Amino acid sequence: MIEDFDLPGFIAATLAEDLGQGGDITSAATIPADAMLTAVMNSRDAVTVAGLPVAAMFFQALDPDAEITTHAAEGTAVPPGTVLMTIRGNARAVLAAERSALNTAQHLTGIATLTRAHVDAIAGTGATLLDTRKTLPGMRMLEKYATRMGGATNHRLRLDDGVLIKDNHIAVAGSVEAAVSAAKAAGLSGIVVEVDTLDQIEPALAAGADRLLLDNMPPPVLRQALAIIAGRVPSEASGGVNLQTIRAIAETGVTYISVGRITQSAPAADIGLDFA
Image (cartoon, rainbow, N blue to C red; front, side, top):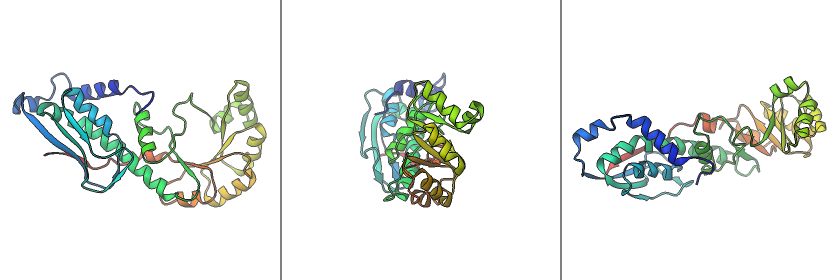
């Protein structure tokens, strides 16, 4: 489901953080050790689902015999009141895992839901929505998984996963030509160069950029930039993108739109766990 990510390690670390040394002392004091519980996880909002398999792993980590039925597929849009999962297992275990499971499902579903809203906003324009590296430390692979469930395409996953020459690289290298030449000399390909102004476009293309990231350009300027690029390389718009601006940006004809807020600012989905 999620490549290059230690899910068992994540589950163990998250539960250890919540359980501490003494475990769930409230449940241990108030619930018999052999009591069973059936609970349903449900969405109280209209959402795009993400993270249910991860949530299930929390319950199974504390009760390997728990019976879990998932009722909604990852990446599907569901209305308010939808039952997402049914859990039957040891009551103490279910309640001890509840918060970790819900936190994860709420966070990832929130990202998928906000992502889907952005994807829907540019439908029919031909532009592709990209995520960014603006993710919580330790959560990147999960959050980028959630953006995929919302319909986005992953941008580079790590610093070793793609070449992006930004303004600071250019400043230190001395020029865009020097930065791109050094990247090529290092054997790198797929070089993306960030440009902030129209007069940077031709030098970046002449240097051998494979894609241009047009940073913080409003739609009229983007159209001018695309006229200069004239289809020679793919284009990417970034900066100042939200649900109010993304349609106009997409209609300029850019190839990609990268949006940090779909991971950085997504509100948690309202998902609860109730006694059945």
